[in-house]
Amino acid sequence: MKKILLVFLTVCAFVLSSCGENSSAKKSDQNGEETVSDNEEVADSDASGEEQPKPEPDPQDNFDIEHPGWTVEFNIIDTEMMGQGTSMAVGYFMKTAREDLEAEAAEDTTLDTCVMGESSPRVPSCTSNEDCAPEQECVPEYRDGQPIENSEHCATPGRESLNVGPVMIAGFNGGPYEFAYEPNDQLYKLNGTGDGSIDRSIIAYNTEYTITGENMDAEDLRSLSAKFTMPPALSLIEPQMVEGGTFGAAVEIDNTKPITFKWESNGGKGYIDITIMAAQNIMSPVSVTCKVIDDGEFTVPAEFASQLVFGGGGDDMMSQMVQMMNMITMDRHSEAPITGEGISSGKVSSEQLVMINVVPAGSINNSDPADTDSGDSGDPADTGDSADSGDQADTSDTDTSENSED
Image (tube, rainbow, N blue to C red; front, side, top):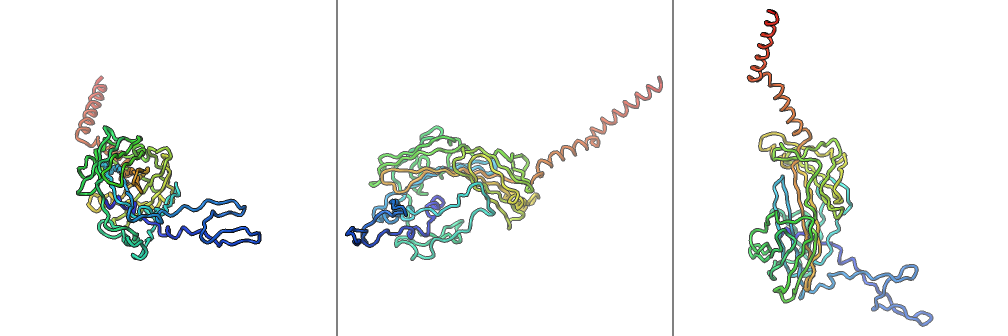
């Protein structure tokens, strides 16, 4: 559940200071006409005298801590790692907290560009509880039980996912299916059981899904609905995967040239993060991340490709660990809102994650032909081939002797 909540716990540090009041003194001019008073709001005017729209009110200004409404989220996660696929579908309902209504931190959405590393350095949105609302605390995010540096943000403590009745999701193969509250993990799961995993075969790609809930069990939550489209199955077309890597199929990459990727596109809707990680040893991995339009093709420039040096290659455990770190990750997100009476914040999202092992160019394709050529060139030296060769020599000798006798 903590992983799912990370989306909602990213805070914009300056939201509260972004909205100002528009007021001015009200007095009479020389003609006796009234101007604007201190207590009367009006739309701003530009130089031509035309009225400009008022700024949108900050949703936090209207946050009712006594009657907060509901926050709901459902996620479908489809992962394929080195040919092995797993899928999950989980959701939760929580009473809305102030941070759920805050604008998410602005993300760099400059598409078809690459950067070294996986993300920009993080900046904390708070330094102490005094920076937060009275009911919030300034806390970090955690990974593997350890706080993430500079991830401090304002969050409401003591929140938990609650049971508000079953939800139906249609769109899966063989569906619709009922998702119900599972109390151990406090998450909504298929039939309310298990660990959240679902059979990957029930995922229908390039298909519209619907989520519905009627006659919910919460007094202030009556219903919910959502429609979203699961993109096509994410699969890498180029570079082509070849068999023979340490961990099965792998992609060969020549880091002296630009790297062209082709994949099953989502028709240009949204974007995909493509990350290439290269490691010469386990202590010094290097990565390039490109945020690209989901149109099916992108070329990583040579200036970035040249910084990817793939280590490993041996049979010892350390070399295999390094080889496992050499990886292409393709990450596609899509989402749509969930609405309904009593819902303050809601969305359904899907994530498709494909991870493929990488090896240096020539380490597979050049080794197999060499083995084959070596075998062919070694055939005459083999016992069987020597026997054949001897037979041919005997026949030749016999023919020669016969011809000489003739």
